Each structure stands twice: as structure tokens, then as C-alpha cells.
Image 1 (cartoon, rainbow, N blue to C red):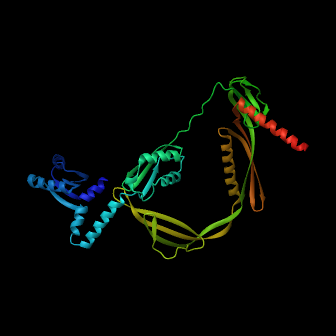
Image 2: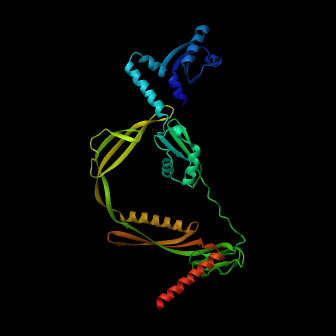
Length: 405
């Protein structure tokens, strides 16, 4: 923002020659002359940038003092630009219209940026804002932050706080998501520990309750391992478990081969609309990749203008049938199966595994058999276990009745 202000006011890059460079800096400080981008050239040469008013003060000080000289190197900014085109009336009129349009466009939103979201997608937030009237082209003076906040929290319950800050023609949406509530454990509620999976018990660690099994016992999913005896049961039961997983992959497929031909098209973006700078809207090739890039016009202070340029490139390719290397396929499939198994056992340990593959109908099937060690303890309340048992008994009764009929 400061750079844009300096450009509007005008700046002068000066070269100062003095015996003592520090003295020139002290004079600038004493006279209140703003300066920046200092470069020391040695032998008493000093370069820096200052304002037009600062240059005039420094030049008068040099004439009175006589111990240093000031020479302008370059001049930048609107005042110097206006001086150059002072007799070009049409250009001045166009510049005036441009400045007027830029002033008007800064009153509208032309870019929306969302920050702070992790679980809630940016698309969901932008969609909800659009329903509330916060979209590209919205007048910034019509934004009601309190209304937006109240409605957004109702529309997206995962959010705990939201605000919309406008910076020129850019709206920055800052959100905070709700923290997940920690699980509240009722220590007075009777519980049991049951087997989450089938396995052979290797180690039992009892924190609360009475163990109903011993190391070396084989347990089935749902078996009670620790009894709370009217109270709470808790512990860790490490068991040896077994898994069988499969992965299938074809041994051939289509491969892209680029021909070297490409076509580029340009469009001018005005707000939400695009003005095409080409005639045909069809894809120039039957098979091609499309790469789209957009570049908006940006002011020196970072404000986005309501127009820009869109570039579309179409790259032609041909598809050809390709056979895949069997060893490479098996290597990829092994990594996928091991990754799936690691997710399945969570913090458990993979003790051993083996792979076997078969070839059928142009595809390879890889089967993995693995042995693991993992915690199969699952804490369940007595009420949940009783409800599950009643449902199981009801299902078995209905099944026997259907068989008799």
C-alpha cells in the first residue's frame, strides 16, 4: 500500500556526493526527509530514493551547506507521467477514465480468499457465502459482517467463528472450525472388555476388572475378555491375528503419446464473463490435454482488478496399447496391500506375511496372507452388550421360524 501511495505522489532517485556520508543522513533526519533503498558506492557516493518534497529540501540544503552535491538519477510516479503527457488531451482523458474506473472497481469484490479451514472445504464455504450474497462483484459497502457470521454458523455447523475482511477489491474470509468434543467417560457405568477381532491371546494387561481368558486362549469376535463385575472393566489384550487380502491389476492399458502439436487460445476476463479472442469454441483435437491459466490484473498495493487474461493450451496426444511389466505390477500391488494392512491394524505390528499371485484373463491377482500382533480389547457397556445379545437372539428365533415354515 505504501508503494502505491509513493507512486501516486512521485519519487526521485538521487545521487549524493559528500566527504562524510553520515552527515548527509543526519541532515535528512533533521529536516524530516523520508528516504529508503540506500546504496553506498564508496568514495563519498551515496544513492537513495526520496519523495519530491524531500528532494527539494535536500537540494536547498546542499546549496546552503556546500559540503555535498545532489544529482537526480531517475524520476517515477504519477506527477512525472502527467507532466510528460500534459499536451495529449485524449490520453489524459483516457487516464482519467481509467482512474475513475479503478476507483469504482475497488468498491466491489473481485477476489475471495479463504483462510483457516482444514476440515470444511473452501468450495463449501464459498457456496454458503454466495447464498448470502457474498460473491464476485458484490459491493463491499453492502457487507454486513454480523449477518454473515450468524447465518454462516447456522449453515455450516462445523464452524465456530468467521469474519470477512476487505482489502481493496479482495475479500479475505477467516474462519475457525469447532474442536471435537472429548469423549466423556462415565466411570460409574458398568462395562466389559470384549474381543474386537478373532485371534490367539499373547498378552493380557488388566487395568480394571476380572480376566475371563488366559494367554494362549483362542477367542472369537465379541467374546468377553474382562468382566467388570458390576463395575468398570478396562485393559489391553494383545492377540495374534491373521489377514487375507487381495489386489487385482490389469497387465495392459492405454498410454498417452504426445504428437508435438498444440494450440493456444486467449480470452479477456471481465468480472465473471469472458470475451473470446478466437472463433471456434470446439476442441482442436480429438484427444488432447487442456491446461488453463488465468492471470488477473493487480494494482501495486495488491488489489485485484475486475479484468484479466485467460490462457488455454490444448496438447494433442494419441492413445496406444501398452503392456505392463509383471514385476513392476507386483511391486506396486505389494506396497498397496501392506499399506492397507497397516491402516487396518492401526498401532499393531506385522509379524510375517507372504504373497502369491495368479494370472487370469490379462490380469494379475495378488493374495497376501499376514500374521499380526494387535490390541483387540474393546470396551463395551453392559447395556450395549445386552442389547446386542437380544438382537442376536431375536434374529436366531426369526430364522428358525422361517425354516420351519
